[in-house]
Image (tube, rainbow, N blue to C red):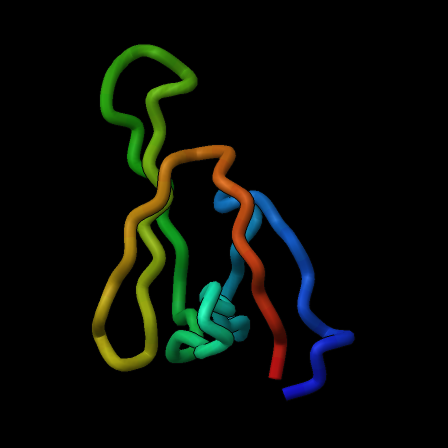
Length: 71
């Protein structure tokens, strides 16, 4: 893995074709799509649902800093 390609992004800026890099250095499966789910009328009450190529998903709060990489 080329560590120079790792970027810090906000959870809402994750996109397809990228992988999440976890604190232990492991990477997620490739992201297939990202969906925003608004939980209430409050514009800040949003969850970012990340769906991976292996049919798993991970949910983040809006504004969370995530490391990602395009392999």
